[in-house]
Length: 134
Image (cartoon, rainbow, N blue to C red; front, side, top):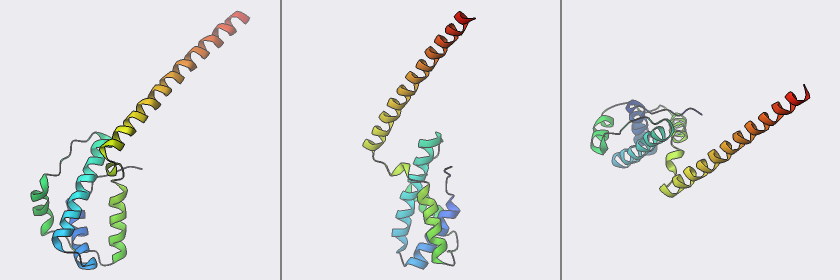
């Protein structure tokens, strides 16, 4: 799955929709989206090494505040939230879980390297055997 960064315009639409369609208070919707935005950015930073920043909560609130029109239906809001959540799975991990993932990746890389060395050794042995038979 290819992850992407949600734009402020998209987040503003979700913000307005949470207020209108779910009756969520403005400050609660803003806080929720700020954390989802930083999680989305952290995911992209983690997966692709992108150097993105959220600009801080005050700037985020300023950028989102007056923008966007709400989705006409709750189904559209639900789909938008699902899409956003799909992009932040990795950033939902705690620091300890991330460390465990890195350790597991290092172990897997080590195993992969050993298998490649074994494949090279087997290939060399087969080539030597073929030369002897010729």
